[in-house]
Length: 386
Image (cartoon, rainbow, N blue to C red; front, side):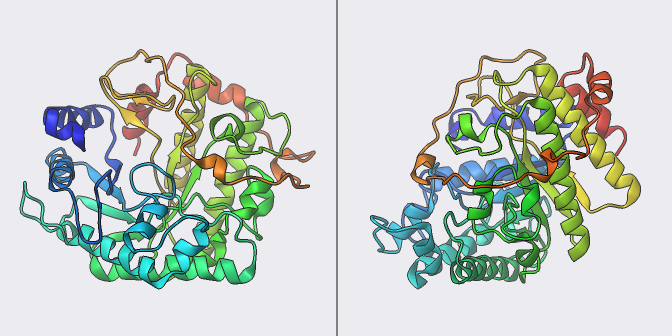
């Protein structure tokens, strides 16, 4: 949002690049360094930056998904909201964030402030803007270590309360939780690792929470290298990762079908240079072929977004897909930003997607289709078929 103040034209150039590459929906943050900085207090320059982004998206025919908070340390974290509520995060756990009534109130008020914002560029209240398609209650809310039934109930009640509050405040727009979709019990065999069961998520029950219109999932690899998690599945090469990805996505689609709600793959990608450009293109080809197949069959997959689209000199954490050039910048490996605070315990666990006889992705088929194609080219091809 600070970038808007120094070069608002970059926002317009970005959305123009989205148009050129067939992207119709973009996900952005609805929080920032000082959004909020105290209960009900927002940096007006930062908010005007978001105003410009929202208005520019509409002018370019782009629809937005806006995430209203962040599980992680970037910008505004649970610890920040605890501090704003007068609750010291020192010595506390994430469960305290979900439990404390004062903290809940501050977060509810934040949701209200965001959807009630009147855009300084077009005069529309955010909750009435037709180009704001979907609100994320939070980016990747989870409850690490919440394995007790009572803890999971607390987490689930927080999600239900916030989703219901958001839906009431913005009844004409869609609401989702913004979760990765890790399975705690049912479906746990499809998880990327044993640690997934410790996140407090139970998608089969949380999918039915009041106010939740859309289900989401986020799918990545290399938790051990990128986030220093204990990835307990042993050696897993690219073929193995594709097998996991395909099986996990199918499990999410089955869940969405069972509850009769649409599913959005909100985040996925593989990082450079840990993987190659060719492998990235192959993955995107597989994911978007699935989207086309889902459209043809009437499946629940309603859309696919990736982390992350960029242009020009935007900083790269290894995941950027540059829409304005065919080449790739040298990526910078990002800091884990405090994720080490959540330790992972080694557990005995069997991945269904690694078991003997598990369905393997036909890598050669996707490699042939993606041969010589950049990700933007694949995006343009898919758009022509949707």
